[in-house]
Image (tube, rainbow, N blue to C red):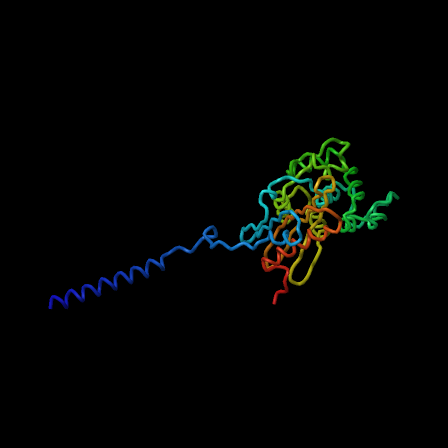
Length: 284
């Protein structure tokens, strides 16, 4: 009889432990976003190794607040923005009215330049696509040193150094003056996307529109290239953002470039890296 009693008591105790354990598991709080499992980052560095060039890339997944990058030290160092500054320059030009819209034509000055696409009359939209330096230099001169510096300060763009009035049409091409890090490029692009810049909504919408490089039923890719030729090695940029899957992915890529034939690699490395994240693919 005693053995039977002890056996019953033991069974009740075991059942109690099991039941309590089950209740404990069910009572666990739902993991917060900061407690999400760590996602294994793809090896973005291999794309640079494959072409044999040094560089960096930073991709920010805004919905999931995740950063994917290669060469984080370089992503924190300032570099002259080169033609990626055309995004900012276009904002200032439209806002100040030095150019009324994206299709108003400026007359070519007749000076023959090394890129054939630059040697004709053009407008803001086409000059952005062709990265026509002289066109955006005219816009900067028309905006003027004081207004440009005021907008640079309001936005907090890079290190805010644009030199003197004599540098107004070249400060973004001179490494000793204006510099911006890839991380700062991402922050600037986020503010552009969100409309959180000291420019009218019309101005922001026009610039966003001229930034479109690819548009499909599945995604929109916006961006701007840049090529800094006054340094050794020369440095290429590709910055922008991808809208896909109800999310926005901001990117900034830099690449050491030795010759003009290296230029497409800026874009190709970025595309390969976005594809590593399952992006730029057909959505079924």
